[in-house]
Image 1 (cartoon, rainbow, N blue to C red):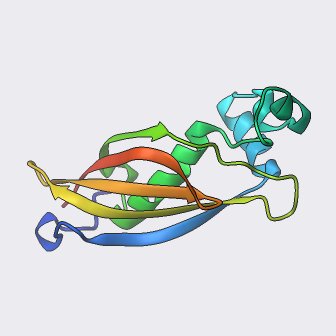
Image 2 (cartoon, helix red, strand yellow):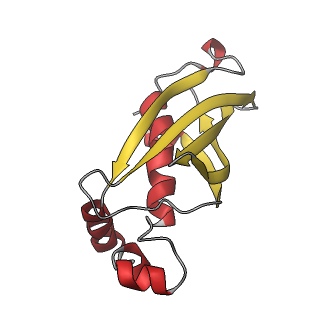
Length: 142
């Protein structure tokens, strides 16, 4: 599979389709099983509060993975992402209710680079707070 997006058709400032990702406690338990990260701050409300958190929080790597989906869905090939990094700025707090939390992600092409690559800057928020900082991906286009 290769990128569906042509490098020549993209301009700096191009906005990718924004997406919202729901996160529940059940989602976190499933992710813990898949990742092997069973830290109780991700599933045990009492423990999370005892260590100073407002409630159970989503795994940082889960939040990072949800955010990059905006890019992989846009480009059509996860293998087109050649570099991806973030700074974790605030946790995604996941209350114990049916709604859970939402991670809202937007992205735009910030720069056209060499070798048919572009830099995409992402913004990820939850409950009105930025949860990822310096969230950037380098993507190879067709």
